[in-house]
Length: 356
Ligand SMILES: [Zn+2]
Ligand SMILES: [Zn+2]
Image 1 (cartoon, rainbow, N blue to C red):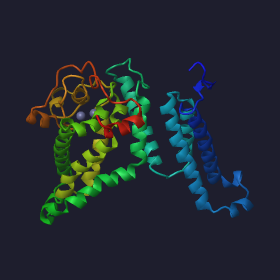
Image 2: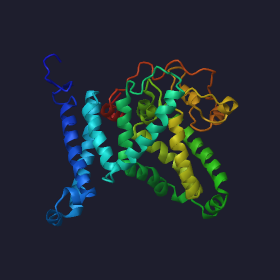
Image 3: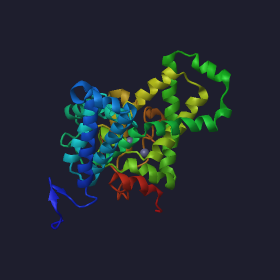
Image 4: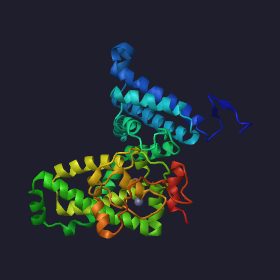
């Protein structure tokens, strides 16, 4: 390291995040400039030149610059752990998106979500911290942000992989009379039923991921976090996420719930699943035995005991199946004892496929 050239505090050798960071800022700046030209054509372009450009191609090239700039910015942060160049690139892409610049991949979806969730959970975790000394940028945050970014950028692909298997493999199980009766119920009742049905199947799939060694390697990525906060909830291997959601969706598809309550559940689960990981000290009294709380799920992530609290929403399922564990205090330590899971995003993605 002593021999390495340094610039802006970065190690400038290939693979250390400097080169990707410089390209990220350059591409994001070009994309941002392009969006400015699209938004304010009368100030920044001449009418003669405008007539010469095919606008669709220009838009596509701007998208390409912003997406590539964004990807390289994340790569730079992951490689170097320094955030200056990467965050500058991300900032330019955010600014371009807020100006209405890009709809490529799930970029808007990612940026919207990260902004809303950060604005909600960062103050919440500051005000009601269970571990007040835990910083926002704690060890592993860049890895978790990469998980968050990839799952949102490819959201169209993962949603498709979640929904399609049910329709292909379980069309035989569909009975129109049953579906009609289910969909005819009041929306609120359907919502409660969806929570119960989805959590029952999530419980089963989740236990399977813990019990089968090959599956555990995928799920171990989620358990490798040693710090619990809202962002840690996004550390889920893509295979784990897609298989769990696809299987949890099967009974909802077969029973034929209406789209309204299903969408309401999707909003609920996306917030609840993040909330139960958050670094917050809330207590819920008697409700803790009925509804999944941060303390309940934190014990699922405890170093010891293992294999407790598989349910997300309804602890009663764990009580029925004998896996319920809820002492008065939060667990003293999180993660897998002697964890074999690598720490960086790309390594976590390929690690489960390797021979143990
Ligand atoms: Zn688990
Ligand atoms: Zn978890």
